[in-house]
Image (tube, rainbow, N blue to C red; front, side, top):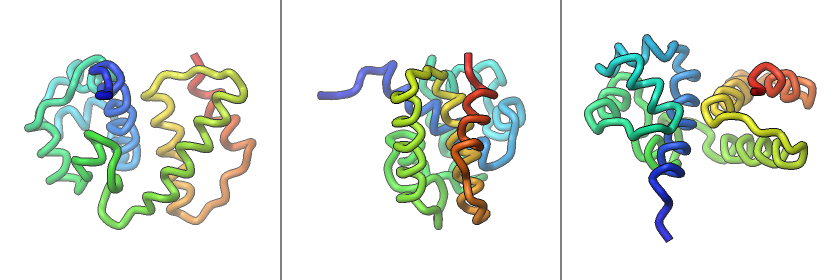
Length: 140
């Protein structure tokens, strides 16, 4: 059964947030870099609408972001990334949020995953306290 548009846009928005955070850009800077308005880019990350193909291509070319990953969550964010570690991080965070009954917005989930993954890439151990702190910082 195909995913609903809202589900697709929410998932894609979370991945856009992850990629942008990894690149180290604000939403406004990313919007400018890929040729869209800041307001439009914000709506992409919030999952309110789909990102245009031209913007996806610009993001892929300029930042070596894997476009199939942005669209569908396949492969990896950028070439050379540890996709298995990223999947483990995502599932660990989702399990924790579910177990604790915590609800956060998809773009905030993406920010936590990006921070966690960056720690993994840099070889820093992430403790439960780190994850709890990140969640508290983004809670609604």
